[in-house]
Image 1 (tube, rainbow, N blue to C red):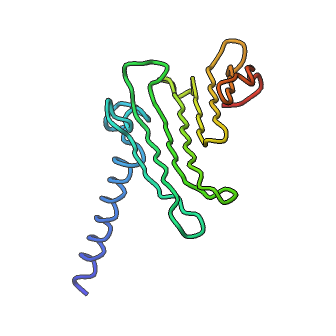
Image 2: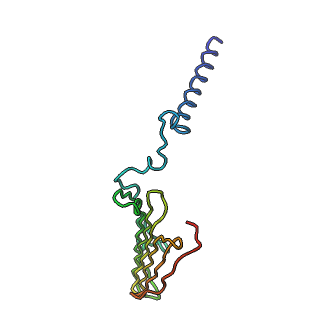
Image 3: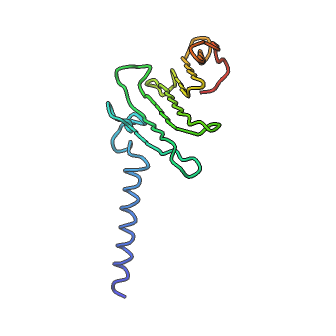
Length: 161
């Protein structure tokens, strides 16, 4: 019976310490540091933020890989954050082994708005390049190039990005 108040007090003290830690570190750190770093504090300067490799499997067999990376570039304002994906797969198409390579990139500015994007696919049968650049008239000017011939040059006017 003598220990019951001590145990209750210890539990209450431990609970208050964990609540303080939650508020201090997780919920409202700006109350104690007087700064609002936001996402800029999460993305370090001149470091590779993310690099992910995945194996591509078709019918239980590995047929290729995909690599996705996110990088920070402080030297270019329009390409401050670079997202890139490279995919290489070898598939059987109509009885023939076909190597397909695709590269997609997106470039964000300092305000985390996409400014440019690129996509390229090389398959031996058809090669396609797509580029988009933020423009004054519409959100993006788009160029689609197939087999070295510009197919479409257009402005995307109604798109939410």
